[in-house]
Length: 330
Image 1 (tube, rainbow, N blue to C red):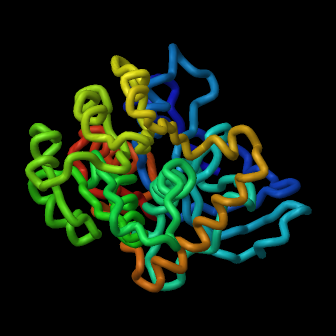
Image 2 (cartoon, rainbow, N blue to C red):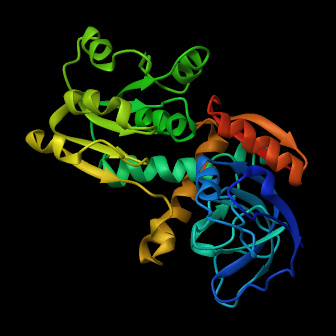
Image 3 (tube, helix red, strand yellow):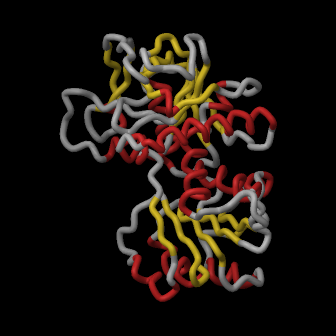
C-alpha cells in the first residue's frame, strides 16, 4: 500500500513509501481511506521531528473510508461499513491507503453528507465536545441563557464547531473573527463577534459585559493572556488546546478560576476506558450532521489523495489564514 510520511521537519520531506497492508487484530478495524483532513496537529508533529528519520512519520488525524477487515473482538461494525474518525496519536495516521483503528474511536459516517463535508469534522468536534462538556462541565439540559462564553479564534477549525455546540447549549456566544469570517461565524451561531487584533477587554466591556463565565483559548494564548485574566469571571473556567510559553497560570489564582488543558488524543494515548466516549461523540455528530443541527466546516477541497495534494493542503493550513477546514479526497 502507499503511505505518505515525513523524514524530517520540512514539508518537502513528505515522501511516498510502499508498505504491506496491516492485519487487524482484537478491537482494530482496517479502513480503506477515501479522504483526510489537514489539522494543525499534523504540522506541529512534523515540526517536532529532530534530524532525519529512517522510518517516516505518518500523520493525519481525520479519516473517512470503508472497513475492509476487522479483528476478532470487533462487534460494533461490519465489513463494508463506511466510517469516520480522528484516530490515535500513538499510531500511524490517515496519510495512507489503509489504516488500523480501534473500533471504540470510530462511528458510521453521515448518510446524507459527502466525504468532503464529513471528513473535516471528527477531530475538531471531539475537541470542542470535550472542551465544553468535560472541561467546562456545561450541562446541555440546563438553562444556560445567563452564561457567556468567549471563544478566541472562533473561526478556526475547533472554534467553528465550539461556536455551534455552545449556541445549541443555550450559551451567549462571543467569538473572535475578522474580515469575511465575521458573517460566516455568525451564521454558525455566534451572538457577538469581536476583533482579536484589537483590545478584547474594551470590546467586551463596550458590549455591556464585565466578565464572562467561560473562555476557550484556541490560538496562541500569550498575546491575550492579560485580557483573559481580566475578563474571566471569578470562579469561572478557562480551557485551552494550546501551550502557555510566557503566561503564568497563577495569574488566575485570585479569581479561583478553573483551568483545564484539552488534548483530544489523551484517552486513546493512555488506553483509558473512557476512549469509547469518542466513538459515542462521533455517532451523535453523524446524526446531527445528517439532520442539519451541526453544519460542516469544510471550506476547501483538494482532489487527489497523493503526495502533491497533501503538500498543497498542508501549505494552505500552515499559512494560518483559513476559515474552517481543508480536506483531501480521492
